Length: 213
Image (cartoon, rainbow, N blue to C red; front, side, top):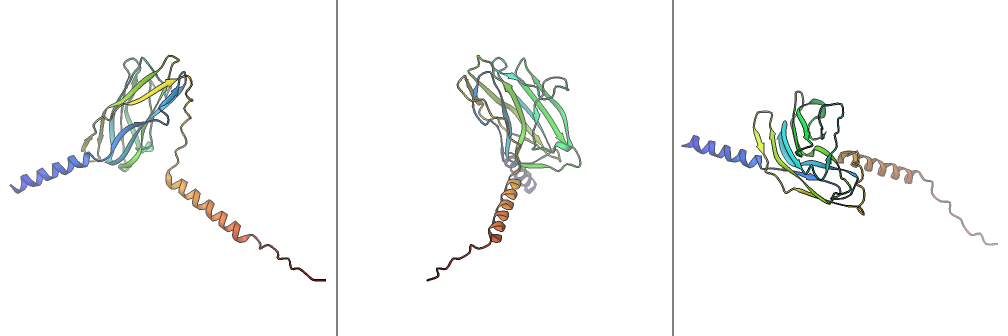
């Protein structure tokens, strides 16, 4: 009986652990100028330690056009993110079906990469909006992550990302370099130190005394 209780507790804890974090679609501006190119990021937040992933996304191929990010490879491909270790990453599948609007991405880290956890960008998708575009939706239909020990975490799909188009909207700005927060903090601290040193080294202003005749 005690063994059954222990196993049930373990299964419950693994199930709860798998529900930690989330995966979602994000864009800097959901209002895009018609006839322009835009991007959508696949993001994760508070994810437990994982080593690989399988992802399936859908978009309306009749309203927007997927833009290939690797013209040297066969087929249309998305841009890999920085959540997994890019230097030790094996990509099993990176393919967009531009007819049906389905994108499949399967990748896993390889030794000596360490497990990834926390927040980050899984992938970036580029699209172009024709002059006739008005509204479209993108969705994550499958999101599974695997650990180094073989456990699998499945995340339920979030609400689709809705994007609208109009001629008077602005062209989406290009994505930034995406510097880590600790780098930005370090640069800010160094600038403050340099500013303080400059103020300390400034010679004091000369005092003028009035002399009576």
